[in-house]
Length: 519
Ligand code: NAP
Image 1 (cartoon, rainbow, N blue to C red):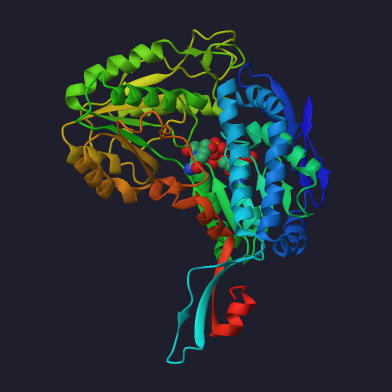
Image 2 (cartoon, helix red, strand yellow):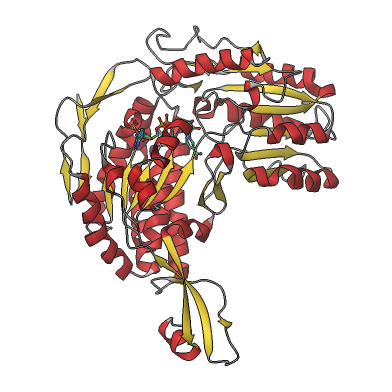
């Protein structure tokens, strides 16, 4: 049995007691344990603030970027080992594992590149300076300085590698030390990543600490200059937001939570066209990749009413070919969900959608015909397509995220109704529109854009070069308003803002510009 450890105060720490179990979701067998009992979280936070923070702030952006580059390269070198771990503990197929692991190395590399471009500065000047009063000498500048606290990162189970690395890339480049915590159930991959990061010696002591297991009383020790970035379910998000220390010290908090992502097929797109085929391909990818356990996965498929029957049969044709089962077996495209609880939640969620007026038109959630695995032991959920022709605005279809390979077709009569219903998601991470109609693009972005963190628009000319809607790129922001948590991550250098304090500095123009390296 593997025993995972935390990396705190510059050393590996084995928690006390039996700890929490980690399972192989394909077989249901326990494969590891981990515990954080006995960790002194007050000391962990102080170590980050007192040792990691000053060391990172003394480094230039180029040096911080070079450290991130070392991490990216080093993790890439052990890609095969990480893929095997992901398959075993995450229940991911090889392709799904690569999505998580390559996402991590690519994001680290992207932020390494931003660091290199920023060069030998240690903080950022925000925009141009401005004359403040009558004298041309009296001037004001805005700076973005690394916050002198600790960045606490709490991640969800579905991206143990990417989730950890995308957050730490932004914080480290901004100059803030990190205390990162993966979700316990899939922590083995994050643990392996952390082991390698420590081996590289690329980061100064205290710059990155790793909590493997329960958060314990960690959040009771945050103070004024710390930040907390959380990814996970909305009920946990509520608990975190209401932590007394976070309220007491006005600790900056970023929440990435649930999202009922929508995709819309424009009424101008003909069945059988290339754009239509791309739309179908993307819907299937978003339903089945990572067994639907992607916060950006498509949950609602809006289609013009006249095309609904055709789309339904085209999706069913493609979904029928998809094999569910042991993710290590060639040809299997959908592995198990990560935990028994996720499986139970998905079954319950499908019932909720049915209660909200949707009907299952394809799939049997309790996937009996699994390849190379025992359906009674593994945590499998079969791809399930629902359809909701006429549901009320308060239907669960618009409000409940089923975190699995599950999506609902929603036929719409016209663009206004489609946009209205897309917005019923209450704030989402991403919505997409497939159309060649110029007017439709403008109207759609205007109506639903601000209800989302990201909008993907696809036409004939981009269908071969675009990403599928669920892919998150380091150069564009990830996050969304309302239900999605109200947070924002990544977005190139925008990702550093959360870890930076904007400060207006007023004074003699020449003196300030010399101090900031502007002349
Ligand atoms: P979760 O149960 O909310 O757990 C998320 C993280 O919070 C885990 O690391 C968990 O640790 C930790 N946690 C739980 N209770 C805590 C507490 N009281 N104090 C501090 N930390 C605590 O979510 P999940 O099941 O891992 O993830 C699924 C959800 O995440 C889905 O709803 C999905 O939509 C959402 N998600 C959102 C995004 C996004 O970017 N918006 C991305 C991925 C997932 P333990 O595992 O140790 O309990």
